[in-house]
Amino acid sequence: MIRHDFESSLRSFGASALLFRIVQLCKDCPVEFRAQLNDFRQSWQWIEIDRIRQNTNNKLTLRSAHTVYLMCSLLDPPEIMPGDKGDIVETMWQSEFCSPWTSVLPLDNAGAFEVARA
Image: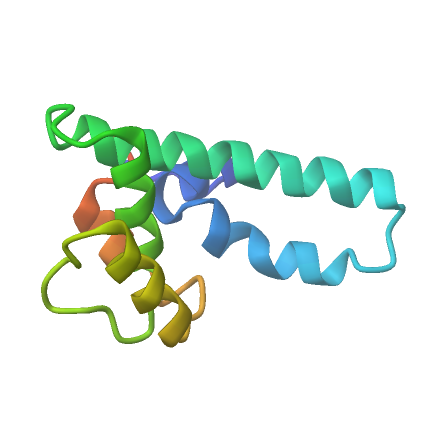
């Protein structure tokens, strides 16, 4: 049975995709509320980054998993992961980012999301 609630969607699509429009719509909300919403999104993104690390059997550091997470958000990611930190930074600066919904499939392939449970 597939559940159609916020928590299930968060675990299936990720914080960026699910919350990006909500954050936009809250532009006129109190600053404290927006800060809490952004903090929730960032905290959940770190959970997704850690899942990427765990799904590589901890072969990646958390920093490397973060790089993979960011690469999944590039509109035109490189075919091969850049070799050193300088190349990674250059790739990021020269690239455009895709929409949060476009990054759902690459993030899912990287292991950022939980598998749906019946």
